[in-house]
Length: 389
Image (tube, rainbow, N blue to C red; front, side, top):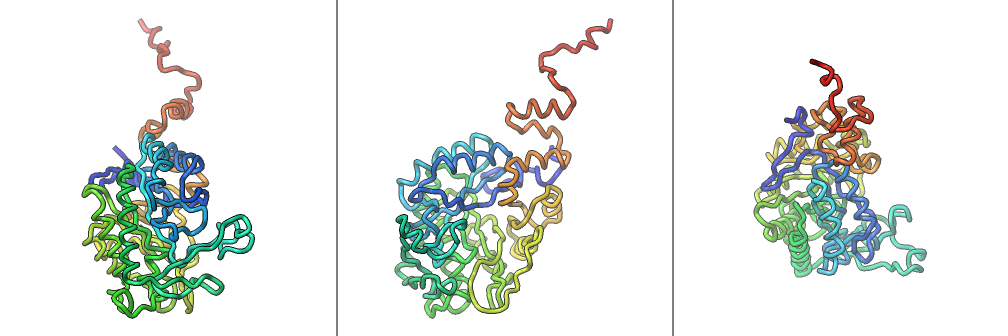
C-alpha cells in the first residue's frame, strides 16, 4: 500500500491511474504535415519508462488551420492515425495511461517554432515552403500588433468546427487513447471565445459570459458525445487572463460547474496566454504559482482538478495533494529535465518497494545497489545459513 498521496492510485470513470504524476501536453513542433514520427515515439516513451501515471501527447490540431506552427501534430484526417498508433502502444505497454489534448490554435496559428522566433511567419520560413495560412477566431482581433487579423467565424463555421472536434475524438477513441482533454486555454480558439479580451461578438457567442462560454461548452458536449461513457474527459482552462477586466477565477468556477454537468471529469488549471490591453496582473511564475486556481475550482465547483506550473520537487507535489488543492499534479519542463521523476520521487518519499515498479531490467540492479548487494544473484545460496547445523 502506498504511503503517499502521490503514489496512491486514482480512479476516474473506468480508468485507474497507478499514480498521480502526469506529463503535461508539450508541443514538440516536430511533426510532418501533422504526422507524428520517431521523435514523438522516443520523446513520449521515455516518460512511460520513467513511471508517470498519465502521459499526454501534445496539443493536436482538429483541423489543418488549427496548427500553431508547421510542425504541430494533427488528427484532422484518418491518415494521421497510423503514425500515432505505435506511439500510443509504446506508452501503454510500459504501464502508463496516455491522453490526447485536442486543440485549435485559432488566432495564434500560423507562426514560427519557438526556437525560430515564436512570431508570425517571416520570409525566412516562406523561403523554405512554410507559407502563412488563414487564421480564425471569435472576432477579427489579432493576438498582438503585427499578427494576422483572424477571420471572424460565422455561426455556420462554428458548427463545422464543433463537428471537427467530434471527428477527431472518434479517431482518438479508435486509436486506443485512455482519455481526452479539450484545450481551452492559453489564448487559443476556445479561450478566445470565453475571454472578454478577445471576443467582440454581438451574436449568441458574444457579449454576456453565458454567450461567451457557449462555444467551449458546445465543444465539450460534442466531444463527450463521441466518447465511451467510461472514458475520462479533461478540460484545460486559463483560469485567469491576468489582465484588467479579463476572465477571472469566479468565471472559471462557473465554467467548470457547467462543464462538469456536461460530463467533464477533471479541470486542468493553467492561466494566461490571452492578448489585450490593460495592466498585467498575472503573478510572477514561482514554484506552484497556479496551484491556487486548482484549489479554488476543486472546492467551489466540486470537481477534480489537475495542478500545473513549476511543480518540480516530490515534496512539493505531495504537499499539493495532501492539502486537497488538486487530485493530479502535472509536470512539463521538469519532466524534460528528469524523465524518471516519478521513480526518483518514490525513493525520496520513502515508498515501499520503490524499485519494484521499475522495468525489471533496471529495477533489479538499482534495487540491489540500494541494499548494498553488489553482484549478488537471486539464485545465490545463503552461505551463512548453510554453515549452521
